[in-house]
Image (cartoon, rainbow over all chains, first blue to last red; front, side):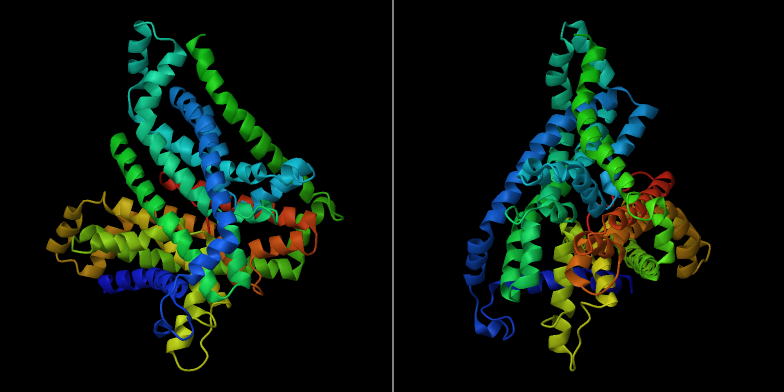
Length: 255
Length: 267
């Protein structure tokens, strides 16, 4: 009974993904597999949408750089001063996880929508992605830093004459690496898949991968939509597996 | 440079970013909601306009149904996967957690592949079986992204329960359903509350899935979207967004008090 429910749930999640992979590779989905296998739809998607794929990769990398610059030092400062203020700050920057992306995007549009130079550039989408992924980076680094005896390590280095910047580079960052890695993979995975904010923030000339997907679901034949989804799976699944591995590894360190 | 100064400087980039792109936009959104013809009475207007009220009720009902079903399915599967070691377990676990990174639009497409006009059910069953664009399709879509989220939370908690407790109950002669009711579920309850809150809040705010499937179903995120883009009713879109944001945040906040971290995200 338990096994049956587990298998049923797995089938519910797996069957449509297999359908989408097959549909993206068959000549005519309506006729089924006997119409033959082909890569023509994948090539067609590449011709139509390769721009969206590169834009998504670019934004994900930029998002990673920004979350590293903002998130790692902040996580260090918050790990050094645990207390009510830090918890309130953590709660505040985590708001984008609790508030639906649509509402956040509306808020950004209301405030910055009239600054056309900003509104129409890719950095506007980047801001949305950083908002949404930053809490993951901060939390991931913080939890690793909280588990080590940062104070003793830093005091040791300080007594040997290392200044605060030197200690940050030589002690904090190497110790935080598992958390940084897990956070980085999470940021890239989530940024590539982000839709709810991006749909409101994008312009017709700046379509990310998920925006392109929505576009193809609405206006393209099923084979093209499926081939596009297949490309997305090929990008996201290895990232997700790496993210789960890195997070589990970082979590083991904190126990 | 003193150590204290350096630590303070470390917070500066975060403070600037959070102020500019989080605090100020939220304040602007709240102010915008009061700038319509109705002023702040707009919040009363939501409750008085049947269309918004029906939407609200419908969104809550679908989210509740998804939460309950996802909880029962994922708890069953989660407990089963923690208690048993067998070949293929790792594969099964991967299948059940991978959709975690699928955006809502992709989940919507998965449901179209199952229940759309060219879908699996329409192909294998006699007659015209198309459910993707109905409220049931929306329910299935929400269920699709809720199952992995609930499963992970439940499994993390189930691994910490001592199997000896269940063995003890069995030795004392308790039948299986008593063991589940009296031992397992009470031990899991904090995780179930947290997981339920995640599922509910995610379903309430899910835009991508609704966008792909629900062309003519009124759920809150879709109504906000159409108010903003089609009707250009900015104040109402802002007011509904504020309500939605407050509700989802409050639910997750309460849930966090019961158990550790909750991460909603996506949908």
